[in-house]
Length: 382
Ligand SMILES: Cc1cc2nc3c(=O)[nH]c(=O)nc-3n(C[C@H](O)[C@H](O)[C@H](O)COP(=O)(O)OP(=O)(O)OC[C@H]3O[C@@H](n4cnc5c(N)ncnc54)[C@H](O)[C@@H]3O)c2cc1C
Image 1 (cartoon, rainbow, N blue to C red):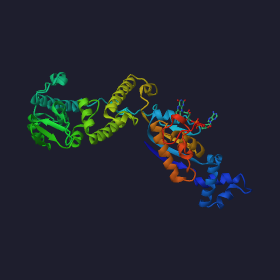
Image 2 (tube, rainbow, N blue to C red):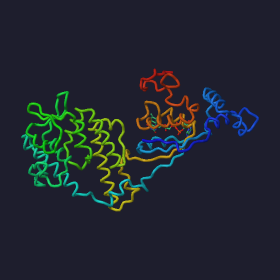
Image 3 (spheres, rainbow, N blue to C red):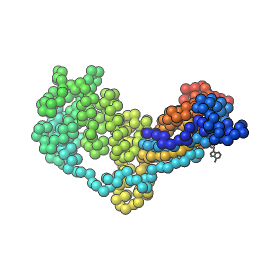
Image 4 (cartoon, rainbow, N blue to C red):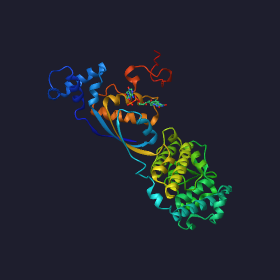
């Protein structure tokens, strides 16, 4: 999410102060503007805000460019009627244009699959683990479990991912999180991966490095990997989990032109489920467009998490109402984040005008939401 103020009323505090002063003055607003110093305007604004005399602030407006927000947020923000909006259209902007005209490069994918399966089959064979999970693919691609140097067009990260899925052990030891059976030593020697030996195990001290190596450029939908093992490794290693969450969110943004809400983006497990839903919607959308359905109708299948861009103009009085409702902890996370970013930006330009803007409790010292409040301030019961 990105917020930029692309335009605003020049000298905002002087304009609002001059408009208010005009009500009690014999001279024109032009002259009042000329006579007002910045300091005098600021003092006047403070008086105005303390009195709750808000209508002069309607003469000052801010225009925001808002990028990287969901269409869920769009539905919420446009409920604020005292504002002007322009919104990036899915009718004219198809986020998947390139993929509609081009099919996936199946050669590249096949070499990844084969490398993964060779690593998987070999590690199962050497460790005595069952390869049943991928047996149908092993048969389909005539996989025999080759050492890395013998795999044609080796895709090393996929190969090692296969090795991890076939025989990697997620350890309970607090000093390390990843281990392999000793039988796999020749494999790690061949790929020159830094590994230490302890008893009957090969230990990987830095699961973060190994995890990033095998998952970094992976397609979370098309690539072969054991989802449960990825989740288990992330649960064991919080540093890796953080990085994987970033990778997944980048993937969601670039592949689905979508974003995930904070609660879903908090765990690899929920994000993977979310990705599956996004993928099903995208597939259906592309199929419909290929069948000749107009984008404006095909988009019905795209999720609320699909991104959009907004230009919004609001005057200060309306912004006060917006910040009041949307900086509150009761507001949904994404729009709350946006409101807080917007508030920080307007405060840089007109601190006096926005001194008391924000969630109502901050100015009141109690929560007007009563028992529905977040607990930061005591509830008000009337
Ligand atoms: C936590 C939260 C939960 C919400 N849940 C829901 C929900 O479940 N369902 C739902 O439909 N909405 C929901 N909303 C949206 C909410 O009802 C408002 O539509 C939205 O916040 C816009 O507020 P507003 O009308 O004050 O803003 P604006 O439309 O910008 O109006 C600003 C002010 O102008 C005045 N005004 C504007 N239009 C009129 C009018 N026609 N007549 C009289 N006065 C007017 C009012 O004083 C209003 O406060 C929710 C909002 C929040 C913050």
